[in-house]
Length: 189
Image (tube, rainbow, N blue to C red; front, side, top):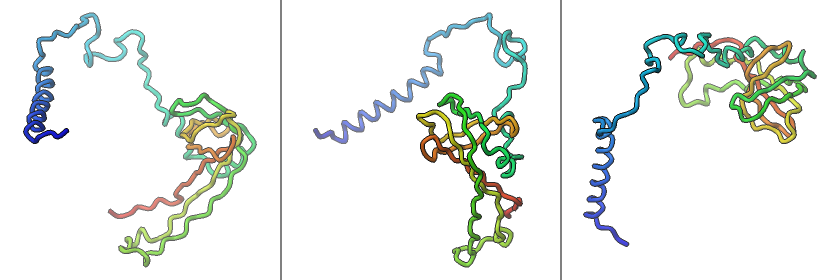
């Protein structure tokens, strides 16, 4: 079935007019009166404490509660090998479960880049090698059906609470990689 240009353009113009007129009618009110409850507190007119049933406490965001991995080193995890960690998914896709830390393994440093092989040489400040503290954490346990890779809130009696990205490595086996810069390098912009 062939559609002529005249029919196509005519239909397109009619559709465009309908799309433009509907929002304009809504802005103009369109003769529709919205229900209003006068017994509710007016939005942005008072504090949260004025509304019964809502606590005035400052909300605790997960980063405040679980941001404690910055102080944990390879040796911190090495001292916890063989102990159990409680993991809770940040996305809520799974119920809490327990993993046992099997080992902490050092990762080899990435080879230094050869600036001569680059099309544009980096600035001198960026040419010095960046040192990293990199290690992997090997875990065992969890639910028999396993869990997908995700960021989990991790709790341990001695290491505290922190967030960690865990990846499946086999049946009931999981891996997490920790990779940190040792020295802060400021690159000129």
